[in-house]
Image (tube, rainbow, N blue to C red; front, side, top):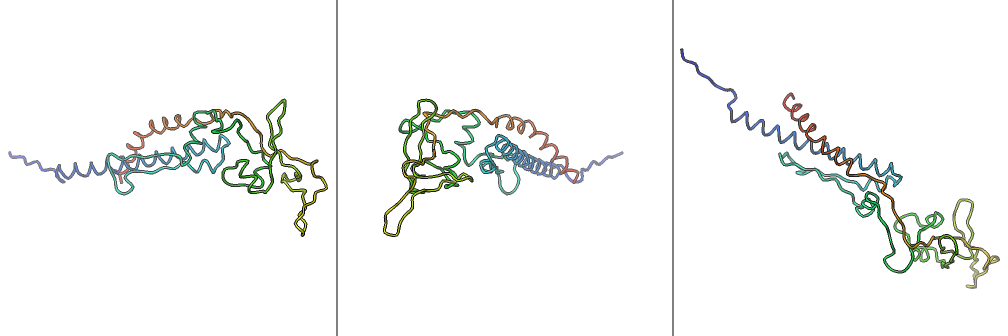
Length: 219
């Protein structure tokens, strides 16, 4: 009796197909876990009260961007790493120069809604000078004179500009509004735990790869 054993398809073809399946499974699984981690980080940022705008700075990318690889990787990062990192670790913020940090009050933001806001920017944008008021108890203030705060929280000038170039104010010297708080430093508490979600993602990666490998073979 003569037995003839033949593997159809041949062993080399089977191995090549298995390698391709592994490459697809690793690439897909790594991409899925990266996207999931991005979503979890964004949810953390928004849940900590830091707003969707900062949350949307969290991005993810899969490498390679095209095709599959057994060495595929995902990168999850923030386009505002200093801000996100400060809330992730906790940080003490001190002025780079001078003695004070000027913290804008809500009324200051009403006139300038986007971008960084400093006392110099506020003065330039509004055309109103700020005056420092030292207080014995509590933080000092930067106030604007000859203004009033409306019920909606907006700052309005009490100064009237006449056609002849002169100015007039009925309440000159008697109406002021605080615009900035002056503090020597600000302590940001730790409000995020990004490492926690990263560890969860790392633990989920093998399962995601296996799941996609099995689905690919059954498909």
